[in-house]
Image (cartoon, rainbow, N blue to C red):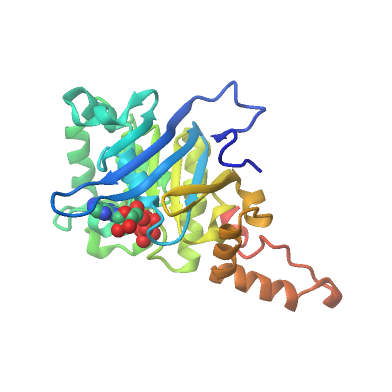
Length: 299
Ligand SMILES: Nc1ncnc2c1ncn2[C@@H]1O[C@H](COP(=O)(O)OP(=O)(O)OP(=O)(O)O)[C@@H](O)[C@H]1O
């Protein structure tokens, strides 16, 4: 496992020479300053990178700074020190006219997908509007083909958001993001409002899209058991810093940092997995591995 102060590149040594770093943070600091209020250092000296076709999961308790990393990556939170680059371009430039075009290469999927869709627009008219606004970036695929890629039938095109389930809406949000051929997808708790089965389906879809399109994903979650099913790498955040980073499997199975162990112990999914492992122990003739808590649909 990689210690934070050592190499933090989220990479696989065998493929490192072939993959391009899409997101690179080095010594990143995000500090919110407001006149008359004490400033809040939400992110403090964070270093990681994500290469094309790879997913980094950012985990940590509430308030540890995960969303601030996400917002900074979109150019929406103040980077007050360090480097934050998307494909070699400083995200600070996203607010310039030229930078705004680059920002289209970074798409975000939020926890509340309903809020990302206009309730007065059908799926088809929402896609048509995106095509109008970003004609130069849009993928050369029909609306029907886009929906097929996210596992939805063509008749979803005539529906309005209130006529779709949470999982279907999240698929539409992903279709809209894919339409703009992003290099980086920032997914902030994209499955937290969904029931377990739908969560698994959305995770499986996201993983397939990473493999098919080569998009890099920054995946933020409280749900630790989901991590090994989507991410190659995991970074654990505590009080604005990364306390542990490494291959997802290694961090979750053999955490080195006490904070990671506490986080794992507090995770409901982990507790359930431990119960399953005891109930179906080898002594009873069936062994359930530690990461069998999420079944086939995700793999
Ligand atoms: N716009 C803001 N202005 C001032 N402080 C902020 C702002 N956004 C976040 N913070 C503070 O920054 C710290 C980190 O918040 P952040 O939302 O990044 O954490 P998080 O790990 O994503 O939490 P959660 O999992 O609950 O979303 C918190 O103390 C929060 O109150």
